[in-house]
Image (cartoon, rainbow, N blue to C red):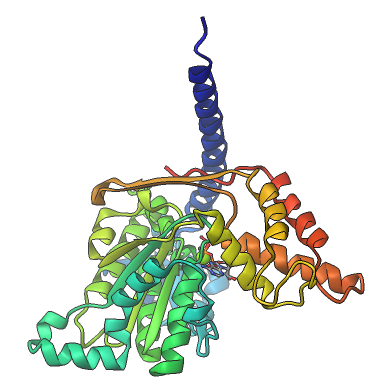
Amino acid sequence: MYDYAKILELEKELMRKERQIEYLQLELKRYQAVIEELRQGTRPVGMVQDVVENNAYVRLEGGQLYEVTIPPHLKEKVQPGILVVLSPNRGIILNVVEKRFTEKSLWSLKVERSVNIYYEDVVGLEKELKELRKAVEWVLSPEIRRRRERIIKDQRLLEEAGSVLLFGPPGTGKTYMAKAIAGSLSRYGQKTAFIKVEAYELVSKWLGESAKNVRELFKLAREEAPCILFIDEVDAIARARTEITSDAGRDVQGMLNQLLTELGEGFQVNKDLAVIFATNLPSVIDPALLDRIRKIVYVPPPRTKEEVKRLFDFYLSKVSVDPEIWDGNSLRTEAFEELWNNIKRRKLIYETSIPFKNIRVSDEYWITPRDVKNVVQEAASDAAFQGLDYVTLDKLLEHVKGLTLEKSFQAVFL
Ligand SMILES: Nc1ncnc2c1ncn2[C@@H]1O[C@H](COP(=O)(O)OP(=O)(O)OP(=O)(O)O)[C@@H](O)[C@H]1O
Ligand SMILES: [Mg+2]
């Protein structure tokens, strides 16, 4: 009478959808908060050109000149050359922009000059790492660049910065791979700096300043070259831009345009600069930006039992392990089977698409590399805390079970 297989299938589907909703609601809250913050904080900013009695002439980033009132308490501070914040209808000066907003030192804090992660630290992802290297090393590796310049004689064909988009579920090694490139190039080629920013950080509270942030960031990256500029959570740009009719939305549009301009600069300008973008949510990234990015690479979670085993072996090889379960290089089969029986109870799903590029991925998995690292790290700290000499199977099991207790769902990205 009943088609149980079908009912089960539908129930499963329902559960998945419910979880998607749960996740998307969380995401929505996060973005609403950001938009609200932008709305409240966004004010036009401009530079004082001249002061005449109680009025100032202020030029906004966009070039328009306004005559505005200087409130008495700011009279002393407002002078030509100073950045000021105007009221929304540009009638009066609300505040004077503190100096730190006008200095690039904000970004220079982000520069890492000696990354110590290398290719051999990346477990699995052979194909992905190779693709990423191909996209980045023709710009950054002196050897490959020399060869390329010998083959390509017309400078104009050498164009723009090497740019890549990495997408995939959280904790699968996007940031890690990008760092491994900076580390390995520094070791085998020439010192390569690594600058990491979250797209959120570029969105300024001050109108017109977001584009300027992008400009300054690229300026810094060029000064630091050879350099990998890593822009994380790049979906945030697309999200914040949805409010295109508001000042905030226009501001983010300006920032996106600036990003496109910087990426499109000639080879001489972006010499020795590679830009890597990363996101969990590629579906919302602006098509214009996607078009500028040379290569898109999916960074998948571990998809087989063997891949999970390799991750455990890799991280356990960095700590002392009970000889009962460790043969010097890898976990003994029975021990891993026991761990595996617990791991496989967890189910995570990652689904997303980039319609514009005809890309669609869908993966079910149990554990991420980040989880494996955390399990081993925590098991090791526990062991130390309890005065044990090494990590035991019990400890590993305890932390693996801790993972499965967490919601057996992380996110579905549509
Ligand atoms: N392929 C891997 N091999 C070994 N370790 C890995 C691998 N991927 C991730 N890890 C470990 O997990 C940690 C987290 O990875 P990473 O920060 O690169 O994740 P991510 O993909 O950037 O995630 P998110 O989307 O949350 O930013 C790394 O610091 C590293 O220790
Ligand atoms: Mg990351």
